[in-house]
Length: 190
Image 1 (cartoon, one colour):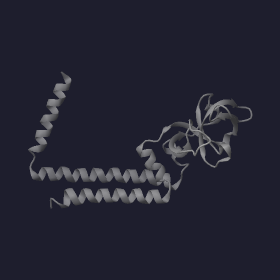
Image 2 (cartoon, rainbow, N blue to C red; image 1 turned 135 degrees about the horizontal axis):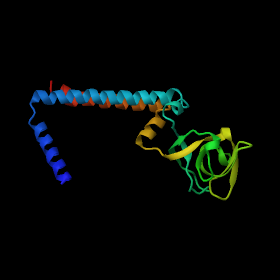
Image 3 (spheres, rainbow, N blue to C red; image 1 turned 60 degrees about the vertical axis):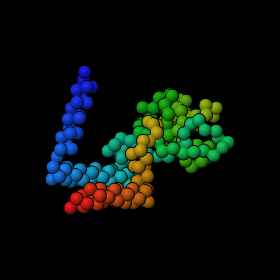
Image 4 (cartoon, rainbow, N blue to C red; image 1 turned 90 degrees about the horizontal axis):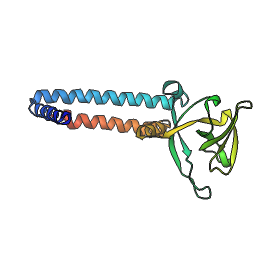
């Protein structure tokens, strides 16, 4: 019953929008333009925070994005990196079985997503394993954070915006989108 009522109300709203005068439609298009512009401004503000200080996002968003080698890849082939979302935590909050991001395993200068095998709170170290065959020991400062999940579309954008070229490209693209909205929908009607 509720679905039929919702569909009926939706059809009624669509008919009301179709029957609007040209002046009222233009008003909604302009309101949409300003809302779209506000959203793009907010997005550029967030991107600016990621560009200015990569560690500042811990204080605001409590998470960050980086590229890391994800587990399950064969070490004798070329490894692929993924953009992942992580959270900075203290060593005391890490437990056995957690997936953490560590810096520089296998003498490669990249981040790795590895599983915690043991935690030593006295010496402030943890043992992790990438492939469950070899365990590596890391000090607290080598642990970047706890892996949360793979980055979604916006996470990938925010990671790309933490580099100057990515920030400029994404900001210009958003400016082109806003100008296109204006040129196609507002300028055309005038």
